[in-house]
Image 1 (cartoon, each protein chain N blue to C red):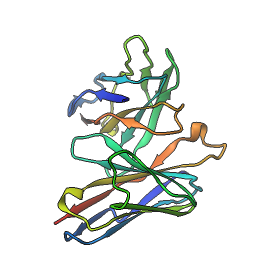
Image 2 (tube, each protein chain N blue to C red):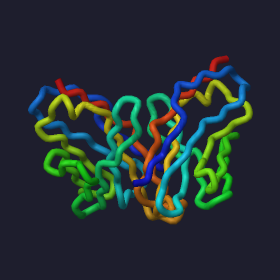
Image 3 (spheres, chains in turn brown, red):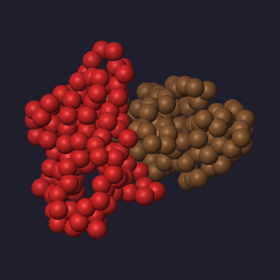
Image 4 (cartoon, chains in turn cyan, brown):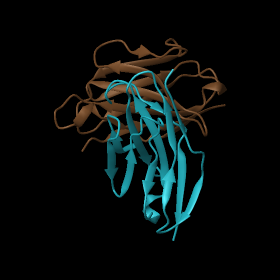
Amino acid sequence: GDSVTQMEGPVTLSEEACLTINCTYTATGYPSLFWYVQYPGEGLQLLLKATKADDKGSNKGFEATYRKETTSFHLEKGSVQVSDSAVYFCALSDQGGSEKLVFGKGTKLTVNP
Amino acid sequence: GAVVSQHPSWVICKSGTSVKIECRSLDFQATTMFWYRQFPKQSLMLMATSNEGSKATYEQGVEKDKFLINHASLTLSTLTVTSAHPEDSSFYICSARTNFEWVADNEQFFGPGTRLTVL
């Protein structure tokens, strides 16, 4: 079945450092790919998404490019802030983003001042 | 907009009792709600999908008689863990989806989760 593998955490960075959280997937069809973020005490929020190969999703300085050849969707940010501290989940959906979501295990990011 | 709440945020109960968890869409009507379960350091696992006014669709391996789901209105879904046992202890998360045009691609909006501990 479909699956998502993402980098194990936790990840601790200093403010303004570069961030990369790796995510690879296995799917039978052509999935849509997502990054969700969960801030402490809150529900998951959609951070960005890409629905087809070579699409780049971006939001709040974060980016991820849908790489079909490497089945990857790595999350990147050039300069992290303390407010980016959260848990990040990579996910996929085989139905164009409107149906079931398959999640990775999540990666906890802590950014220190 | 698009806020989803869950109640309670945490609950502790004795083995053998039943626990009800509510999921509400506060400012939109949810045509579909999803229930997930999350174990420590594990990913969210979809338990069931519920559409307003119809029976929930359960994922393989999820006991429908154990986890009762009711989606009686467009703003409320409930998950009842019946005869709870320690192995049911987990973090339960709901999400809600609407078909309204202002939401692109029928995005899911997540609640903050409910921590269940069964003694």
